[in-house]
Length: 286
Image 1 (tube, rainbow, N blue to C red):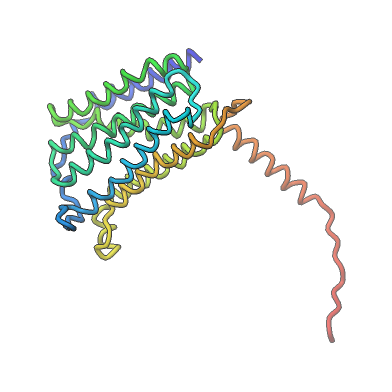
Image 2: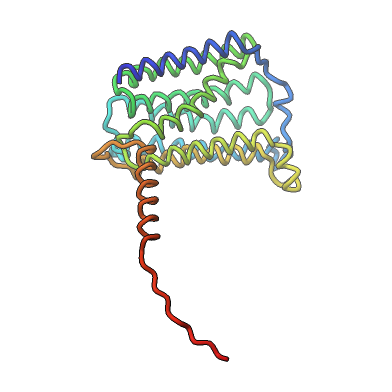
């Protein structure tokens, strides 16, 4: 386990070095602020992009309450409560920060959109370390990871370089589904992590096709608005997972479960094919 932890950190450091010293500087494209849907409703500029952030606040507050209400989520490991608390604080803050940004999109306001997201991203990584790699190291990693997220935002603002922020945002998109599949969980309903990752990837696709979706829907809804709604499904699925899960008696990774299921499927298929089938003559009218 110790060797695995060391390898994870080595890979993370190598990825950071490659990003910072091999790739060119990534400045903030000012066209990013030019969203397809800029309609005003009820006196709210960019109304749908603003209002579609409300689900983040709702699920963030619900999750935060359930973290402390009679231990509803049955959090048993040291650091779990802290990790999930920061996650739900980040999610709820996205509701405010992203709404504030979309009222008047610019770089200064974008800070308050991205900062809560880094809190959610980095706390999730810490939670995964606690659950699946090492409880003690994961607990101690919460604050350093949160600081890494904050520094990535400051680095972008002071040096107009998105590389550290890109690392903070996109590495979890790869690492979390990979760890969810490869590392054995201590709780049931581990597949909810994959549902959450799937919705986040869909959200990023919708963000990239903002204008295209707006045209496809005959200017009813834009890709960025749908991006907010799909991204809000991430904490929804994770909250459902927390509410439904139990501690497993035997820790088996999803990859092992899939292999066992596939082996059983193939075996059953062979047995089905080997069964004797009898035919009866069906009379026909002449």
